[in-house]
Length: 397
Image 1 (cartoon, rainbow, N blue to C red):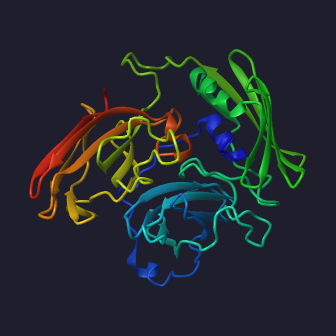
Image 2: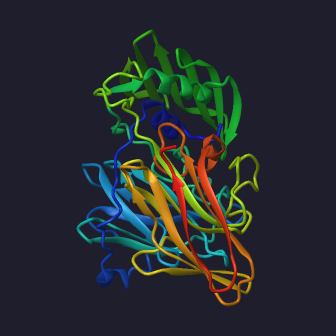
Image 3: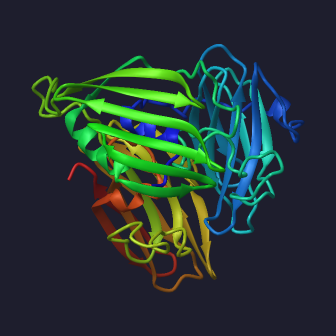
């Protein structure tokens, strides 16, 4: 069980939205003097912790606003980008990749170009007690981040938790979410999760230091259900859930209403057939990742890592330097391509472009669910010094 209560709830209700990173400009004025925590329009960026083992850093954005707010973030050193939705009066966490030297710097801003903050990664190790009764992982999780959602510490979950009162989900989505209710006891970053039953009639009880701090209770029949959330004995949300057939509302175009999403990786060497099967079954863990992007089938990029924008970028691999361009995607055909070239110091460098379909209910890479990704297509090429090639894959299968 890799999720905190709020992350479980978000996965269950499939509350996803189409988020655009393109077009958000991070203003240079203001960002330059934001080396400490700054608040812009009731928002505050905090560097929470770093996990040198996984090569990631966790950040949190706290909101004093009366409405949900979309905040875009970018990593200065790598151009990794993303967007998180910060709930009204609440918090959202997100995770970014560290540089090879274990550092990183994140800038967060609104579409209006107001800078929320610019901060380096925290020195605090993830999972360590930060002296405030928390475990160094921030507050509640957000499903638009990298999947490292955590339970809030004492007092951090507001009673006006902004959760939809009514939600419609696909029957197949409900069945895939049953894995979150595998009976047993689990430990998630200092919290104990006691799981019993199934989504039809199940409970996730979350305890901290022996005290039950939150309870998620579900009850479903054939075409509807109810989800109840309690925090320290007080019901903070009740959600009515309607189940629909997964092939409903396709408009006759053959689609089931579910928008496919993909992870596309450009890497040294051969493609990984079963991504996430083990701790080292990741391109990043093997030191082979050049660039990556998560995207929806209509061509919207939901998260990027070291992607090229306009001009080609260069990646170093030993004494060999490889140049690569932007991902070129045609939503009509599902074909994605990228131009690559080998530097003069390269001698038989192998490059692969691999496209993976993301798990249902996700629109960007989630490390804890990487083993659910399916390799759709890949192409591999070996280049000698000075040679060029175009790698092309078909994400539409």
